Image 1: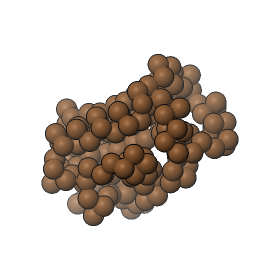
Image 2 (image 1 turned 60 degrees about the vertical axis):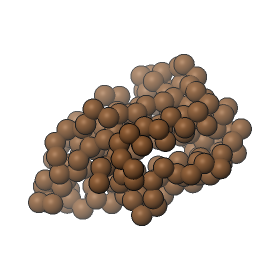
Image 3 (image 1 turned 120 degrees about the horizontal axis):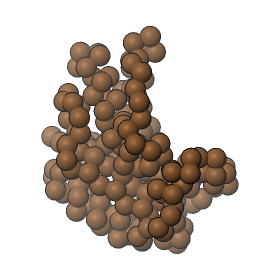
Image 4 (image 1 turned 30 degrees about the vertical axis):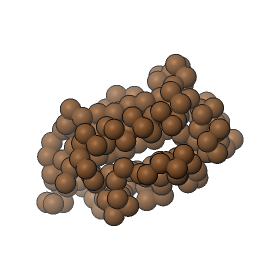
Length: 179
């Protein structure tokens, strides 16, 4: 089974948050580095809201406090319609594996939100719910005293850069824990 690290940038934090970027990378938890398979799409915020996904004020205010680079990476060019991004993501997932393990940062965040987006359009999610994995849970298995200093890859809050950083850190946790 192949593994994918998923990261979303959103305008909310509920399970129906409006998506503004989708980033993902293929990786092996017991390997080192990420595979060449990577996916990144900026999503037009209006299309997320038009699909019934939700923005919240606190998240908008949070984005205003993020780095200029993160805001430009996420919002500068507007993005593609959400349904188009989901179709492209489905195609990309199919190139990775028929039914990969998909890791998200938090049991109730990335995977849940993107499933809500697929459902908003009546699309099937391109992996089984049985293969949803929680990066945050595994990352927190490593005690802080053994937690290696780890630099972020690229721009924080760029969906692809965050996915890559999380995949690399997960590999480090697996190695430290002897998994």
